[in-house]
Image (cartoon, rainbow, N blue to C red; front, side, top):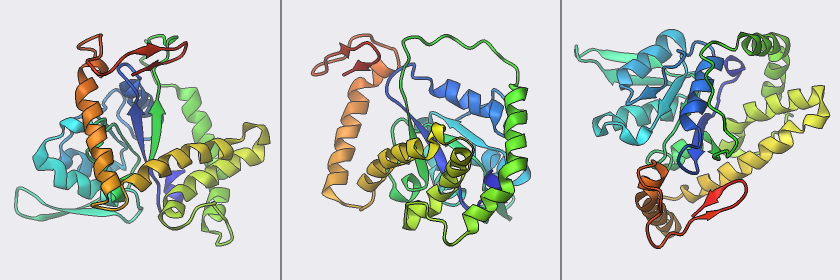
Length: 272
């Protein structure tokens, strides 16, 4: 439904531990999203590659392990994320030839930024929906390498059937998303889709579940809102400490967490 809307949020999976399924999530998206390149999630993507694929094909940007991105790319990537959520968003970039390149960068974007280096910025975080990935003790490896064509056909049929209704809801000034300001601008498309689904089957309660996820996202976004805010600085210090002290555990390099962390395993999850 993204072509129907003027704005659309990014998705940022947040891994709660090692083997949470972040790469698998990106691989699934690569099979379901239009014009995505199957099995080609981008680690250390060059800005030039991302810009050209977005301009030429409207290709989704599926970026894994953003924390490893080269520092010299940071300005270009931030420009991409500052503009890629809106339909008329463009990025201007000086090419090696010296000519000015102008790229339209509105396309689906799924980004794993485990260090929160980019999502600590309010302007980027406020255009994003954060999804928590929790390791499953019953997880079974997926050896399917094909394309789930039946699901893709169903999604495309849903778009053809409901895109007009989605467009009417989205542009109706009386349509109340339940959010205001920036949040209405970014979350409105998701609320539209949720209400259309619920109108077909109320028992699914999609909007209710969506609002729960968006509430968690807003709580995080508000932390990043004010530059120089003492709470934000404290949050960043705590976050950095947790990431650095547990990095080897999350990456599977060591099994035992270092002091002062202690491992507690419940039936469903592992906590530290």
